Image (cartoon, rainbow, N blue to C red):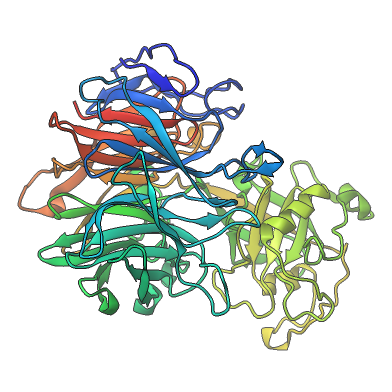
Length: 640
């Protein structure tokens, strides 16, 4: 049992049970998560997890992001994601930056488990936040020797800056800026592109950092940081050039999310999490001439769903983050998926063109599963483009006779086109689908059906993504279905032209989109040599429909391997807590007999929301595990 160390107050000791986890919905608005939506709760620690200390740095939900640790294990660094409005407190009439990195001294936790304390803070630029790409690496070159903190930068306001920042944290109490906001940029742009993640490595005489370029393909950017004061771009790669996606499964949204680099058998091997493209291996011994080694395939049907639910469904992709085991025999990948339901077939259920048409959920929008009957159905109404500067979206009450058409259980559904782009009748700037959805929500609509623009050829269809601020159902279908919903000839794509001969407020046919439960994101075990998928793992609640809503996010987020035991790894599982898994093989000489088995965990009686996880070996010989809780701060564990 250990107490929490708070910046502002000292909390009572936690009375933690060690006899396993429980499940339930906590609905205390004054509880850890600050909402009445509930979250998964537990009874503390069990198995190969022991709580050592907690350092509370905030009571703001979702403020904390990644965690990393100095090479000597004495200092933890915790990313402050930034307040929801991306603005800190006003001081002297000026708004100060609130995002940045907390510096926490953990040097004495082995002898005094209650000793971890906040000792510093590195502020980010105004309207700029770090998140997933934080790391401390020791670099020893002819131009620099010491510990370097790597920080990604993503804009969250008008003054934001992108790129990567490097800090000398050899003395963590006196961090020194080495370089700031460097990265790839478009010609003529002053600021570097936003960077979602970054990873640096010392290659002997040289040092490098690879970053995730949010804004363009190629999105794998490698910089020489041998002199960290003068980073230099040496290579850019688009892994789609190697056909890593799986279009036959509908997995075509391939982009870089995260990566690590490790020296294996004298070569530097990069392991990239390339979303729907799977997990990819590159030989970057010469970063300017990387060699593609191969990529994993998502198994069809999805093996985890087949085993846990007994249903044969296509995989969803979402390769988020991965690490090699210490012996390099395996690597473990985590697929992040926040949608426990996928939409069923999109159907037009009335009129001359009844049938099934392609559709997807718009990223950032909600699936029909959030509705009481898990089904989006009802007659649709055309609303134009729906941008803030577009022709206003009418309210359902403004459409004569529309509300009288609704049957019990049906929703009001507005149809909005992607764009505008190339439409002479709509000269305004295009906007994000979330902005359109907000206009629709403000006008009183229950759901939005987005449609591809004329020239859209993506299959499955794509209607953009992002900028959602409302919890509203958002489905995307193709332009053919749009024409048929409103009996809008011509039906031949070769003959489509702007502007559409369709007035805003026109009532169309009825649609129906149901829901199929497919669980949350889970974990893969791969053979490093063959890239064969050997096993999958998910917490039990993640594949139980009873926990689809009201228990927080039950997707896995990140993995950190044990630095001493090649069979062990630790998972930050958002509201599922911290989990320890072990690779167990019935035949040590046959990797195909290996499986992932849960051997420990921690889930607080007040709930957790773990984002990052990191490991190191203490001077006492124990493996220590650091986990960042989005709603509180740093949680420190060890393998007992």
